Image (cartoon, rainbow, N blue to C red):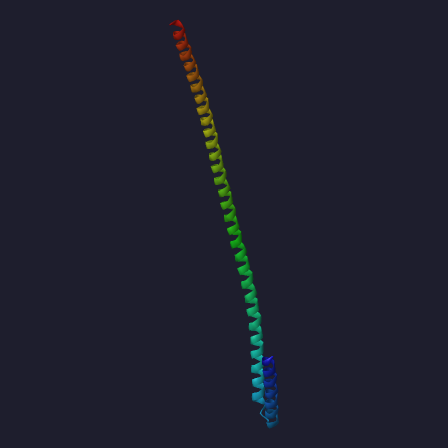
Length: 138
């Protein structure tokens, strides 16, 4: 708002000065000054338009670069997830095989223990039977 007020005020003052010079007959310098001011306004306007265009182009390029970077990160993340799944799958398979092996070993130990118990039981019964035979024979 203050820039607008200042601009209007300066314009008014310049018009008063030009009118005064015109009345005094010094219109050549005023025309040159007006031309200079108009050229300055046009150049600044063109510069502002170019700067806006540059800013838009930069924004588009940054957005594109960001999207490409994000796509690369997502691809890497997918590879990492696939690798993690493979590692987890291998680990679970190994653990399952180990568990099955341990169960089989446990089953084999239990079977061996049963065989040993039966053998000892038979041996004990034979010894007992032999001892009874010896007692009855005496």
